[in-house]
Structures are given as C-alpha cells and as structure tokens.
Amino acid sequence: MLTINTIAINRQLIRKLSDSRAAVINHLLSVYEDRVRAGLLREDEHQHVVVDHLDHLNVKLFDYQQTIRHRNSFLNKLFKKSNSGGRVRGLYLHGSVGCGKTMLMDLFYDNCCVDPGARRRVHFHSFMIDFHTRLHRLKKEHKSSDRAFNPIASVAQSIRDESWLLCLDEFQVTDIGDAMILKLLFEQLFATGIVMIATSNRPPDDLYRNGLQRSNFLPFIPILKENCYVLPLDSGIDYRQRSLPSDKQVYYLFEDDADKHLDRLFKLIASRENDTIRPKTLTIKERNVTFANTCGRVCDSTFQELCDRPLGAIDYLTMSLVFHTVIIRNIPQMSLSKKTQCRRFITLIDTFYDNKVRVLFSAQVPPNQLFLTSEVADHHMDDDNRKLMDDLDIKFGTEHSKANLFSGEEEVFAFERTISRMTEMQTKEYWNSNPSAALSGSTNEWSGSGLGGGGAEPGVTFEFTDSTPGAHGVCGACRLSYSKSSSSKPGASVYRTLFLPLFLALVLIGASGSPNLPVLCLSPRCRKPKLTRRKSSSDS
Image 1 (spheres, rainbow, N blue to C red):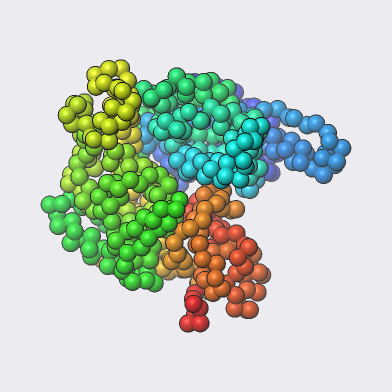
Image 2: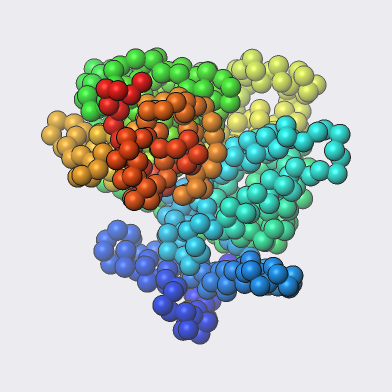
C-alpha cells in the first residue's frame, strides 16, 4: 500500500518525467483538487493516494503511446523493425461501496493522455457480454475441425485493435462460465499489450470466493497481479449515502399510495414522448422480451416483469440503451430463499446505474430493509437450486453446498452496493446526469410539479428512434456495445455517425443516411452528437 511518503516521491517523479510533456499531459491531481475547491468532491487523503498513482501511470502511458505510434508507423512496418517497448502495468483498485472508485477511474479516463479512440470504459458485465458475443460469432465463422484456430486469441486481438487502454468498472466474478475462461482471455489480452484499469469491491484473492470449481479460477489471480498494481481505497466512507436527497420523491412505499403517485409521474413523463402507451418487444439474442406498458423511451414495469422472468445482464443492458426512464413497481422484501430474483435485481440496478437510467421505485420497505440476510435452510431453498444440487449430486450440509451459488454469500455482499447505488439514484444530481432523457424531449431538469422543462439544443432536432434492437456491435465513438435497428429500409429514422457537412448534405437531398454508416450507441458515456431528422409524412 502507498504511504504519504510515497505520495511525495511520486509527485517529484511525475514533475521530473513530465516537465517536457506539460503541454500534452493533464495532471490528474490538479483536476481532482480543482473539483474539491469547487465543492464537487470532498477532501479525502485515501483518494489522494490513488490520484497520485494514476498521475504516475498517466506519464507512463504517454511514453507507451508514443511507442505504439512508432510501431504502427509506415516506415517501421516497411522495414519490419522490432520495437517492443516496455510493458506498462495497469491498476486494480478495490474498496468498500461508495468510497469513490468509479469516480476516480472516470476522472482518469476523461483526463488521461491516451487518444479517445484508443481507450474504452465499460462495465465488466457489458465487457463479458461483448466478449461472448464476439466469441460465438467467430466460432460460427470457422469450422470446428480447424483445431489450430484459437478463437479466444482472435477475440483478444480484435479487442486490442479497437482500444489498448481498458477501464473496467465493477470487476466481479459470479458466473461459473466467466470464471473458467478469465485466465485464458486476460492472458491473451495482456499479451497483446492491453493496459487495464479496474475497480472492484473485492481484492483479487477474494474474487469468486467459494465459487464452484474455484480451483480452476485461481490461476487467473497471479496473472492479474502481475499485470496490474493492486491498490486499496480504504476511506471507510460511503459518499453516496452522504449525497443530499432530491426534493422530488422517486422511491415510494406501498402504504403511501405508491401506484397513484407512479401513475401520475408516468403520465407526466410519457407526455413528452413522441409515442403512444403500448407494449414494446425487444429482440435480444434471437429472443423476444416484451414489456407491457411503455411509451417511447419510458418503461413502466414491475419487479415480477423484470426479475421473475429469466432475464440477465444482456437484457438489462439492452433496456438501458432503449429506455432512459424505467419505473419498477412492487419490489418485495427479498431473502436468500429467492436468490435468483435477488441476483437479477442486483444486476438490474448495476446496469441501470452504470448507464444512468432514471428509475422510480415502489417497494414494500425502505431500501436499507429490502434484503433479509439469514442462512438458507434446506426447506427454504428454491426449486432451481435444489434441482441443480441434485444434478451435481451435492448434498445439503456438505462443503460443496456452501458454494456462493447456493449459500447466497455473494448476494449478501453485493446487495450493500445495490442499496448504496439506489440511494444515489434518488438524488437530483443522478437524474440530471443522463443527457439521453433531454435529447428525447424529456428533459433532465426537475421543475414544477414533477419532472420537466427545458428542451433539446436549439436549431438541431434530437430524436430517439423507436425501433427494436436487432443487431449488436461496438460503438465507434465510445467502444460500448450497442443495439441498432434491424430495419434498414429508406426513410427509417436511425442514428448515424456524421460529420456536420455530411449531415447537411443528407438533409438537403432528403435522405436519412446510408445503411453503411455506423450506428451510434445510446449510452450517456458516448459524447458524440446523436443526430437524426424527424420522420416526415412521406416516410414509411
């Protein structure tokens, strides 16, 4: 762990290394201190340690980037000169919930010296979904008889070709499939020269703790430590809990006429959408997922609709790309006897939080009472887990029955993060952080009797396409996975990556864009303008 003396040494080293680069390198400590002085952040000595380390890493990445540029230069390729350069170790930052890990990683991502096109910031869930999608597509393209072909190496290289700085938020391993493949994947990623910055609630040695077949996962841990400095953030403070609550209520209890309040708010928000209230079906991985009550980019759903059905991270991610506001009604008090629903709810909140989806809740109890923690008795275990134990020939009370999959230990650990994030999701700052809501005509600002006011940027029409996501890829602007309309007929209103002259030219000729132009994702992480013209009466 870094000490205060180490901070002083790091600062001297940074000054010495970066004097000649002052014009091109942002000093993260200066950015951090400016935000503290502006009252945007609170002074935290533990965060200072991390920022100093990130500053030091930023200087190393500047030199590493120059090496990569030289290696990719025309003359270097022409004469086939070898220019391996020094390896740069990334950073694995772990600590308790709400202590500022994600904030510090985002500060680094937004201000580091790495070219925007060479860096990618993504939630770990989304990253693994993207990896499995690429892997599945690649396996279909190659014959199974080709034993020399290594699909994981090819996928790792494709990820590296798009970006060599990888920032992963909420690095957590709960899925046995991911656990078994992480060693092979990251071994290849680090071999290609990728530098990783990751945040997690767990130190490396506690990842996939008590997981099934954890012995097969353990070789990944030394690979992680070898390629990333491990740094704790031990402030012991949950800053989300200290955030000021909004003056507008978004969390209602059953006893407070929750449905009446949410009905009013749904009508208010839906009135700003260019659509009618109707069911909407999303096609996700060749599956149809229908939501009974939607209007444009607003979804009025229930806990049963979201967590009782067999939905997973990719479904919630697609929802976060399609809807900017989601109402979740009838959230019950959960216990370990319903671990499957609890896991889905945790994944749901994580995904919505990372994509800045605005959420209104109605629940049986306050957030800090939503989860009852008690040991699961055999007669309280749900049918799915009991069947799985029978299939694996695992008896209740044995060592294997205490794995996270059955014990609920991971859910107990993760729900603390869920409660912390739900607390922040009720603040005005969180609701105003999603630009997508304003672009669709439903503004971020809260005013009057509810949520309203404002509008889109003057002179430009911003409109979110009401389409069913059918295809998936990686956004060229922010490197996140995106969903796009499966329809490409002329006149369809779709997102396109356009330079202003090209956009004006397309408007003049009355076209909506060429099908070959890349679609932008809808994530608030993507800062590129999402431009489209409104449908005219002549559009089909």
